Length: 565
Image (cartoon, rainbow, N blue to C red; front, side, top):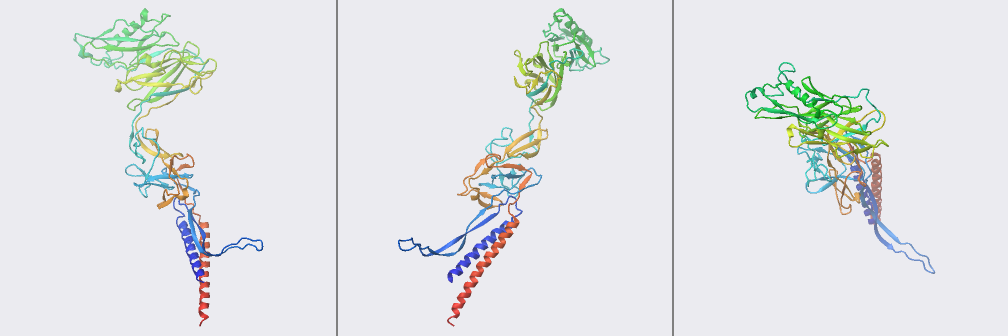
């Protein structure tokens, strides 16, 4: 009878534990990423009354006689089944769809969790706001740009920190250049000074901007000289004549007369005897070719001071109209070294050679201190005659434009032009039909402030800046374990590695079994109410049965006591 009492007690204890487990699961039915537990019972072996015997030649074998001593709790194991995901619309709420765990630091050790309700603290750290534990990162993403500090494993989300401007160094051009289209009227090349000159009374009076301090020059013994340079329509260099002497009496008409005299010299005429003509329109000096068609005309003006006087000269001559029988104009916003947006205008023009085009920089906004002819024209853009694929450049031309801005005069800015892969159709092409070529992209941007962040499925934290640029800020560290069921709970939804879980294997989401991350969502508890209610009933039945065993054993013992009365 004593054995029955103790057996009943083990049943009470075991089912009390079952009740505790079920109650804990129900209590955490709404806890983010909670993993329900399940209890497993095992028999307690008391004694072997008689051992088994094997059969002999005259008798059969006998089974062992063993008496149990009740029931015990073999283990309480977690149910690692994936919980459902619920949308929160908070981009820093993260849910893992897989076997991984978020890695965080509590300041002394690394802890792991499936609950990804994260936020940013006052020091710009990505944290679990409930505990202050720091979310950990993996790799070097964000270090080169200064968003993350090398050697520091926590993640910084630098709201309000300025991202420095990046000057444009590459421009992409793609699309088709017509192999057969011809303009109804071939265009005549027209140059236009980038500076509109201010005059005191009409276009023939003294130019107060061109000659910024003429009145100061009166009576000075050493006057300055103005000279022109550049190229003719056929690409031959202009032969400079005598420079124009500039003094207090020089006016804008003198400048125009000098330019026309220079262009009209025999040495500066084209092979057909034509030459450009300088006029004034809208306050700008305009140079118009003497004939229509493909042209390499360009003009520059330089002033050599006789003493200390200075002129405000045109930065360069814009190409108002590109000469040729097929021209495709294109524009794109680029950025200088200070992050200022400048509009670059260029044109692709068919040359007199089959399947060969030039690309010329017609103008660019901003204060330009220098633009050379060599730096504004890319010659010999060639296409395969057989299939229209981009075939690279003929000759030794550099596939780039070079512009010197006044604010950074010692560092000319080079704009490499990506026209596609030689022999491929991923950039410019030349087929019959319409010309569709356009400048499609560039790699510069202005400065900006971090405005918002998102996290992609691989765990990369992506920052959106006020300048429209998106940058990768960091990669969230995900840990996996050989035996995740062996992790040890430490409260607040956290786990630590145990002797039987194996050490954490660091990785990124979407790597191996780590799973993918869903931003703006949280994983729900996987505790099922209906299942736990059934477990409660089973625990109650088991408890009652064990209690009944104790009662019956007690009643029998009472009968035995009554036998001697």
